[in-house]
Image (cartoon, rainbow, N blue to C red):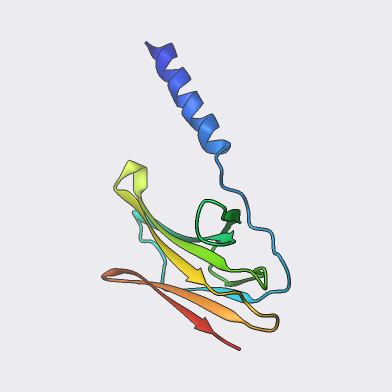
Length: 138
């Protein structure tokens, strides 16, 4: 029985390690700022925010380009220009030692970004949950 449990846990860890999430590699000059404000977890919780980048017309032919985690210090990524984009913001909150956890995802379709444009996604956490804004900076 212990061997069967060990094998099941080992298989789950291998699947998690080899999952379909890949790091997003910049597709050009920096044109999207990722900014966190007040998203810190507490003593018993952790909070993370990720952005998934997809390109192409909406539907089964969309191409997954990768995922980038928002960092406390902010980050600038290079999104592809001249192609329609679909961003997915994933808000993750996890309890300590296997407590409550959950992930909410919001799809953000965008028209093609033109060269020279700069955009900013700002994410915050307050007493009612995660909040986000998408702004064109220039």
